[in-house]
Image 1 (tube, rainbow, N blue to C red):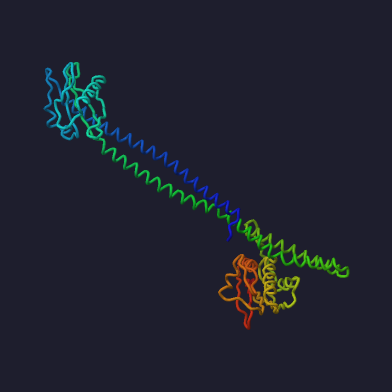
Image 2: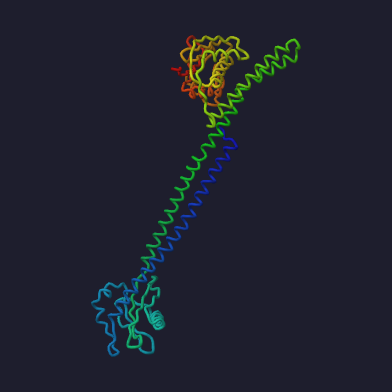
Length: 411
């Protein structure tokens, strides 16, 4: 169906809601991702620092001075020393730079050793220092070894932080990919939820457009007839009384039409329930045909039939069937038959191809020949389904078309 400005605004609002939902999700995920990245980086740094510092402290307790002589024999068989990634021992005289006493692995250069030694002297406890060696970042822990009342040596334990950094980088990449996937999923879910939330509004707009089209369809003929009656009465004083009576009858009909249309609008909007009452459908059909402004050529055959339904809506459906047959039957006689809960309206016009009959019950579909507009037939089917019945078109025996409205009889 054509998209009205109101529907276009609702669709734009849906996309705005989708974008807001996605933006909100992105902001939340970004905050959580930043916290996760920061926490992971801090955790890996702490784990590395704790590992090298604990190992350095343990090895520093196995190294000792005896009469100024540093003993390193325990390092040859200590598990902490054997499993250390990087290990070394430096010793310094009371004055001067430290020198390497034990270095099974590579150690920082002399400038780096001087810096580590100075830091140990200043803090007089295990210190942590990061250095670069061969393009790698190494985290060192230096634990002091006391010679009486002074620090005579230091045990250095190092660990390459590149593996930890690589694992952290992989985590960041997975977080980026995961957040992107979650944002897309959230946008899709938000779009679906916003669409579902707007369905009642779109349905209401569609019903409003349908109501306006059907109201115009229902009121067009009686209004045109009323105008002709009033113009005829005003042109001749002799015809004025009869024209006035006819105008009053048409006004009453218009009132019933408006009442029926409003009742239907309220039923479709869910604000009103149809009051089903037992009625003689044969009498309702006869009265409806009698009230038509042009009923020439319409023959009615009825049998007493009681159904349960709304008289205004049923009269509206019957009126649509008969007027469509009169308007599009090619001037042929129209026969209305009521029996066994079936209202059959037949003409002898050109008919409608079988492939087009069902389509003509769709709203806003314009047909040819005996069917008239799809709006009128859509009303007929809606009334039939509301009463638990059916409505369909079929080829009439001997030529023409017949429209049948079936209503369950009262048991």
